[in-house]
Length: 459
Image (cartoon, rainbow, N blue to C red; front, side):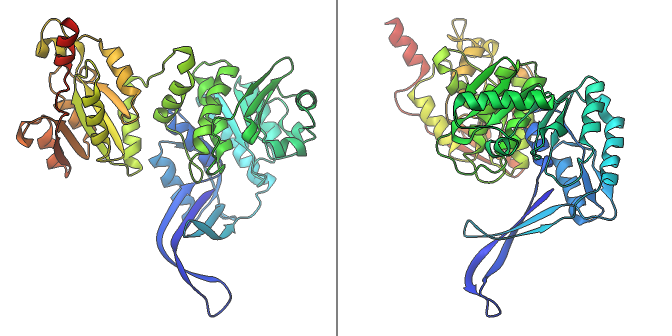
């Protein structure tokens, strides 16, 4: 589906009818429906293809272009007799004034086109997700599931039908509480919920159910196990698309080799992030990393985005129109001056990248007794700061005591350096200025330095 948003101000009532007049000032197109699931997977660095039906129209072409920008492999099938399903929302003063739906129900003949294409591309994928919106495109879903399972694929389904027998053979179904009730689930007590869920999946021939329960979190239920996960976001802004985030994250984590219980635990964290945003939102690896870090504090564990993946995440942020700020340093012993400086740097834009001298570079610059803390530990401490989005060591690009090559790769919008430098003395400044960016010099906090901390400890 294509989600279209027309934004504008409404200060008058139409003389033709008692409706507001909206003066449209901004147009926005987004991937909706199953395309939003694919987008969530892509944002988590999953390699994903999207199989579905579109019309031979402008909306279909717009959707294809969005998929290309999101690095989603398009397997969309065009049909000439029906339009691309589109939902146009007119928004004024942060409220929806009206929604206009353009859609027709697809037939079994159209669904056969999807089945044929699935058979052609199935070998390229390990997991198959079905997002059922009851629009007719999945009228042959039982044949599709059999095809996928016969090829040894893991099948996950976000169901719409109250007849779960349609999804026979699936590994996971992810109904919400309302869908669960419509399918015959009981919610009188926790025991009745568990018993009825097990009865439903047994009768339907489904291996496990991930039941999303709004403020009650979610439950993973199979024939012999049940695991409950508390909701991770108490103040909900918008639940739109939260189910998409759940099934997408579940698939990515299973694909990474996690056991189902652990994969659901991560999916639950991702859902907590998604519902804190407006609209059908995606979750970035950095957001999930921070949430996971907070969640694991009690265990003393830590998770950090691998250095090699960071450049791709920065590129996604640029595609979203976010302003990228870059700074660099040794950050050997983190102190108040560092924290204030990094907060000031982050305030210049949307995302802050910190280039971190590797251990060999610090030894060359500071002497044989430095660094005090090795690279991985310095990166861990920096990543825990709210102001820091990404940390990349210089050595990840090229052995060098300056971040010039790294800056050329990232090409930030704003380059920040602390101290008494002139712009001409700052490594990478020429590249940033040449590409239309800005370079700023910030003052350090007086009396704060790693060298002074070390001297004090020695004294």
